Image (cartoon, rainbow, N blue to C red):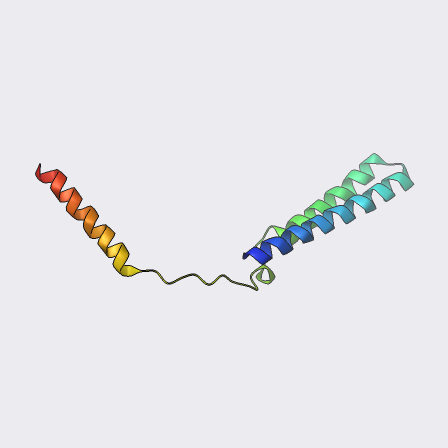
Length: 91
């Protein structure tokens, strides 16, 4: 998931949960049922989780372009590490 996908997922989750809360409150008030309100709100949270938690393809529309690795630096570091290890063993 790229950074813009994270923003989209957060906004989508916020809108779904807020809408579910408003609908749940209205239905709970109209019916006079706290249990109904919690069921509707819980259903909204479940829908938000299904929509936002998995890494869906539409969250990867703007992939990051990483810099190429520098192999000579990693080789120098590994060679320096090996020579330092050999020096410690010979002492």
